[in-house]
Image (cartoon, rainbow, N blue to C red; front, side, top):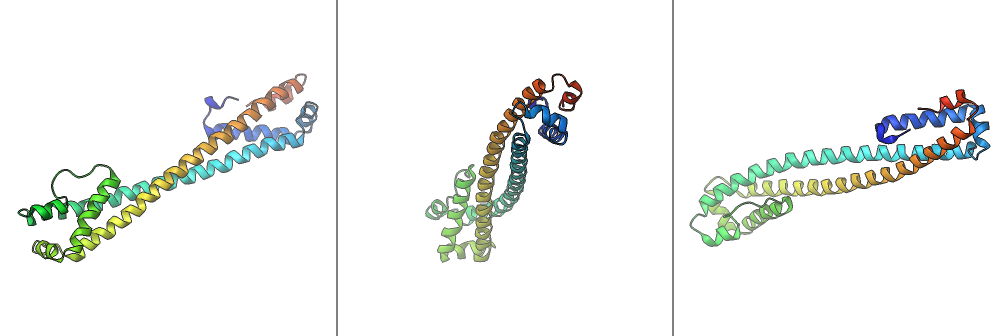
Length: 214
């Protein structure tokens, strides 16, 4: 039974059948017990199987949560970016003649590519505008008021929260994948050893051995 030649689900299905057939057939049990694989030893294999199954479900859940979080982050980023870029373009017009304000709001130059750096850039823009009533009045002449800036900042806060959730879900999915790999190795080793013993124990009973060949 080579896991490398099977999908995970196929392998687990075959392991389930292997252990199940061994436990329910008294003749197989009697033969393997002589070589150390009694009920308790087979139950040990069943325990390893269940451990892999449990962590696999946890991994699937973590991967799904990661996917949902990333989709939400992508959607929020698009919304916040659209709002910010519109305000940025208008601010560049409104403060075109004021070098100090332009520098304070980082109006010139490219936008940051890294998400955290970009969010900090947006945060600086909004925070400094909200702190300067005169700047807001100047911007208000172009249709952007305090309420609009606050909405931008609220959207940014939400984006930060989802971005943090993305990182947490990414780490959780990675941990669950690693745990699954470790537990799967333990199960594979148990299966390999058991099949070697079963082949010896059932050497003169090929019809029983056939039940264990997946």
